[in-house]
Amino acid sequence: MTLKLAERVVKLKPSASIAAKKMVTELEAAGRKILDFTLGEPDQPTPAHIIEAAISAMKNGETHYTASAGTPALREAVARKIVREKGVACKAENVVIGCGAKQLIYEAFAATVEPDVEVIVPAPYWVSYPDIVGLQGGKAITVTCGAEHDFKLTPAALEAAITPATRWLVLNAPNNPTGAYYAHEELAALADVLRRHPHVWIMTDEIYENLFYEGERSPSIIEVAPDLADRSLVISGVSKAYAMTGWRIGYAVGPKTLIDVMTKLLSQSTTCPSSISQAAAVAALDGDQTCVEEATALYRKRRDRMVELLGEAPGLEVRAPAGAFYLYPCVAGLIGKTTQGGKTLETDTDVALYLLEAANVAVVDGGAYGLSPYIRLSFATGIETIEQGCANVVAACEVLFENKAR
Ligand code: PMP
Image (cartoon, rainbow, N blue to C red):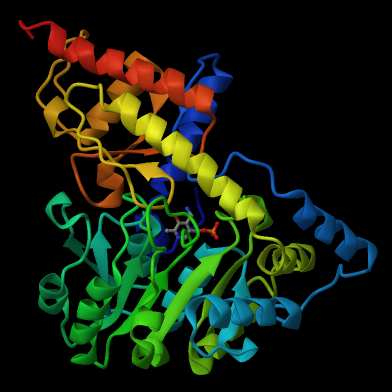
């Protein structure tokens, strides 16, 4: 190719989960039937009342550019939700709408990260944070949060990671890939550390906030420590809770100064998100929430079934996630095992490839999320796929243990 690419793009890798999904599509096109657990995307249709709102918007002529920050109706609906659910003050001017939560994470980092800036990213993390930070020339400082701490950041680990160059701490709860989220007291303890470091801002990605399976919902740091709200950016959206991944609507809530800068960037990139999708998102946020309760009940059933089935697989250590829709089993028990083809499994990438080969099951390796040896399986997929896929995984793991000579 003769066009010279920017150095920052040459270094950029594609999103691991999207790359895994692409591989599944290619294998299926070649005639293989793959049981796909790769993508974090609800398999349910978008609820009918949301679709109706979009149709009405089109018929009513809401088919033009909107303000770059989003329609007043949607910004106000988000502000109402924040006040209603988190009990903190929020006005429409504190809200910006984007083409998915991902775009807002991107714009927030584009607005604030430059060379020498550090962003603390607890691992395991959603695949895109370090890459987006790197794209702006910044440094993602990953802090390992192991199973011994339920995959959560401890106050001591946070304190140790903060330097004068730290600009952001990223919190993502419920977490992708582990489903872990913080209790009120745990967030309060992190807030105590953050109060000692006023130069650190907090990005709190709450895209899975509605999807939790036991007890209390995941609290937000802005409700636990309202005094930190003036340096916090809440990220969320309608993709996961309302099965609206294709509509591409997310929102960010924070101090007006940051919201205004992000809006300026949006005005120079996408102009605004789809007017039709924004009207649909208003219906999602303001409408009957029974659809979210039903989705959660469905995911809970699938989670429980998957934990039960995969619990039978030798070499896998499975925990029931508290929220989101992923299982993140440890595969340490499979490392060192030899396949029938004579290959020794050395990493979780080897395990993921083995499951694809031997079980026709697609998963994402834990390395992509910054904590190995693990694999991620999404349970936002049909129960038949779960039953068959887990049975195949159990059989493939058993084979590794059967032949003692290996
Ligand atoms: N944050 C996390 C933690 C996610 O898992 C995802 C989607 N996989 C996003 C943000 C992006 O969501 P959206 O579809 O709203 O861009």
